[in-house]
Length: 64
Image (tube, rainbow, N blue to C red; front, side, top):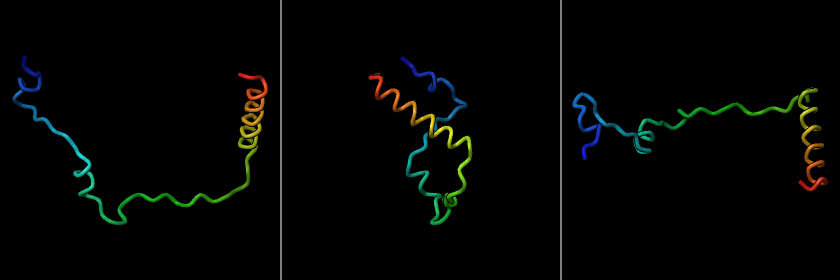
């Protein structure tokens, strides 16, 4: 049985390993996100927390 890749002469097989990815990294070249600062809660955020807590309590006490 022949592999379909072997029949195409114009295409080359390639692969990437972790060693290839680590070669180009320099110290400090990685993306570092900024710190998350606390802020004022929004009405939407408070609503989601209250809804999640209520749904959790309903599921716990309903026995689902």
